[in-house]
Image (cartoon, rainbow, N blue to C red; front, side, top):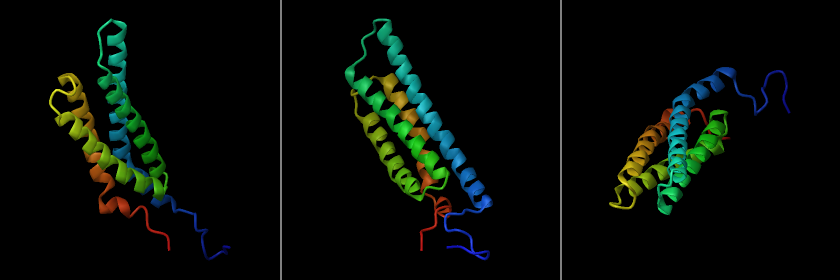
Amino acid sequence: MTNANTAPRSAVRPETAAARRAAFRPVLVLLAAFTAVSLAMIAVLIAQSVMGIAVDTAVWIRCSLVFASGVVMLLIARSASRGSRAAWVRIRIISPIVLVAVIVIVSIPGFLPDWVRIEQALCGLLVLPAAILLNRPRMGRHFPQSA
């Protein structure tokens, strides 16, 4: 119950919401770029298949998983930018895991063709600053724990 002197618990001051959205803007741009690069790779694989160039199944699977992870991370980050503390916790956990997975896959010699490894490394370079930004104490101030 609220009265004239107290705001509802779910109310967020506009300046707080604007500051949170501003803090998330670079994260959303980085994750959108990650997703776009992954989608471009899928388009390249489709074009190669149409032209009759054989593409290894491992490449298809890996690139599809990276694209899917990009979409999921982008959706979760969007939700966090709108104020969802649970989404912020999720993206803080998921982004370093995706980064480590990319590093491991890129570092396995001969597992993927060099051109795919370069694309994967680029994706990792896009996730790295996002993971750092998401885990900084300054970002956590936008999501105070409930009393």
